[in-house]
Length: 103
Length: 450
Image (cartoon, rainbow over the protein chains, first blue to last red):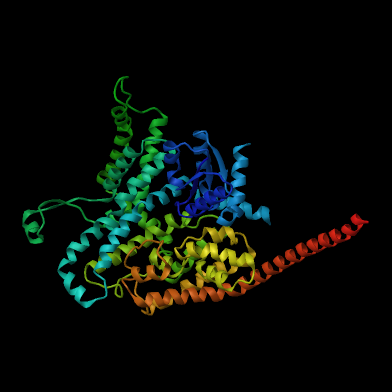
């Protein structure tokens, strides 16, 4: 599974990305989560094949644009709920990602 | 209540998500690496050793060159980047939009002059065209933003109406792309030229005058300390990245101040005698220690003073990112967003730190910031560097963390107590269930044997 995880600048998303990878490892899964900033999402989607695009809650002001970008590339989009944007909730977030991928 | 706060978040997101504001924010971010490297050259001259100062004195003008070409030329870089980001949102060619925008900016903001050989000899520079440097830097920022946005909008307007030169099939796409940009480029550049040379209208002066009311919140005065902090905390409390709105509003004032400080240092001033204290670094190193809301203090309280398991765990997860000023884990983890327990200190702590820093600064107890250093440095180290290696800045940063801890303390205690109570209740319920289970198991056993 390839996940693109965007926050505003790519800093906090790197923490959450690590959390997701660890949570998946505990389940015996291998996933790739690339942290990025909202201004690079379009390029990232052009360059690599992702299954889903996640957006950090504080970057909600870019939601419309990122969602459109994901749609244009035919990718799933998920706005991370506020309660799940911290490494402790990584496992719950992983569940949510899988749910939205198998919808 | 929940519905209300969602609405507030939504409208904040709408303001911050404005296409132009976002392009400005993303475009201005491009300057940061250049400005940081330029700052190193300012800082080199400020190392606090007498022998070093003596050693590098002859190099002063050489050291000033990268400073002039980094933050001193920021409007050029920002103009290209803002136009390019905005063009990307319209799916218009980024590079050609950026280049045209820079030319429009230059036409509007820079008045070339000629240096005659006689004067050139005196000044030890080559005779010919000369350009006054001021508007290349932060003083040109508003014109830079207007040029970038205006250019991209004109290109979009022309494309929507098909006012473009179409090349016959078989012409390479790169070639035809350059012709697509030709008509809009001509329109917007000629327009800029008419404004400047025919109407003699100084767009930069005009924008600075019109937008001067905003400037009251970006100058060396008390409201400029308070307003950005309030705005930042309130945005974050509703879960929206504060800098998304603060960057386009305040940075056009903070950058000229920093630029002036760096220029003053290049001309022999020190961080103690630099002209301005109101820069973005003032907030970065003395107020937002640990991130918006000065949350490092709260991370410390959680790590070392929590009685609840949740608090201890939160402390462990948030304190390391917090040291490097990344605080989304605590903002969304604890959470601080929309949390009545912490809304008050989240606003009060940074406000108090801002006021203390302001007092310390105007009483000359601490140097002014003369450099832009990476925001991911731990607070006191960044404060030390940004102030030209002033040890008092470390003391102030640590003192401010202490103040924030005191302000967060009662709210932290109330939260921790509540958390602990919940945990104990949960544990008691579990124990009861386990006891019941054991009891019923014990009851069942004899029944089974009978």
